[in-house]
Image 1 (cartoon, rainbow, N blue to C red):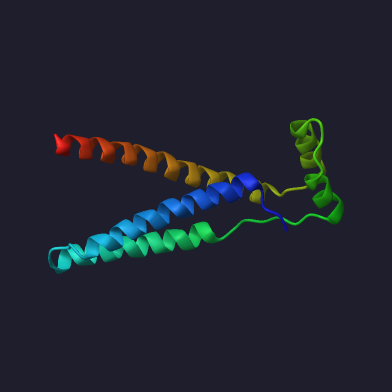
Image 2: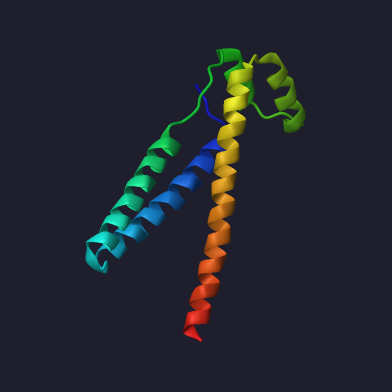
Length: 129
């Protein structure tokens, strides 16, 4: 079984972001004022842990030895090589749809994180002034 490098990189990136957010939330526990605020932080940590579990589960498809070896051999035109290889593989519509949904969720998460990260930086800069 093989998972595409781009998917693995996106998954790792998502995990790093989630783990960073979880570590930040854990550090907030020490400065939490009151039980309600503390419980809110604990609930957010639990949500992040659940997301980490979901993102950690890889999506795989099986291929025979010949296909596997063809993926490892570099061709003069990797794009054409990939298209030719993809035409020889039968992927169910369900698998294709699930992949598209997963990819949309990852990209939406990355975009949201980037937007919020930029806003957080701007807020910190304004607070310093």
